[in-house]
Amino acid sequence: MNYKRTIIISVIMIVSAALTIFAGHTERIAPNKPFSEFPLEIGQWKGTRGELDQKVYNILGVEDYIIANYRNRSGALVNLYVGFYQSQSQGDLIHSPKNCLPGAGWNIVHTGIETIKMNDAEKPIKVIKLDLQKDGEKQIVLYWFQSRGRIIASEYMQKVWLVIDSIMKHRTDGSFVRLISPVTVDEKTTLNALKDFSRQVYPFLKEHIPS
Image (cartoon, rainbow, N blue to C red; front, top):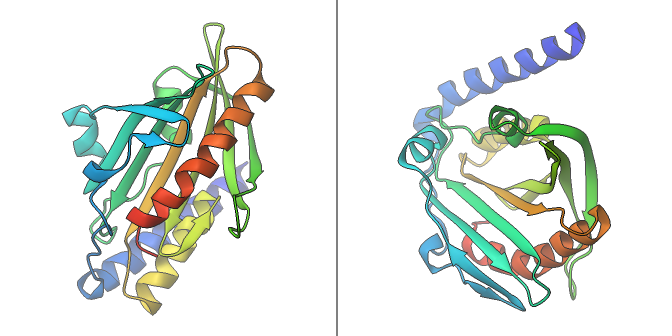
């Protein structure tokens, strides 16, 4: 445990040092399209847009975002949050839900990796899956980092690629994509709904997030 903690601290220190060095050389990249134009009808899913609390918005440090609840004809509910950062060189780093969710009272009972098969010619993507529980309620979370043309399913590799791209590409922009759905029938049904929504929303994410 101490060994793992040492690695985590070392990675954070290296990332912070590298971003400080290259802060003056990185570009501030804007979204391809503002997230205010993100569609609320995606296939059979229809959404209602929400807003972040001002304090939460300030803490996250995002330049643009969307948060919305989508439902399909079967009544399945998916909460979508996408936070876009033009630059992470000034200390506004993407936050991991593994740190935020326990603070909201949710217990992470299982963590794993899921593969989502995409439509048409798109390659499958790997995402992080969290199983949550609080007071008898269950939720499933899928999330990934969509940054500079990569889909990253690891907090550690997100930081590693951030350093590499700040040096090689002079870019530290990035996005965090998170989907949450309550378990109302069973976990398999909920996971299938999340994967279906992921397939439907992925092309629109690519339209908004720079590659």
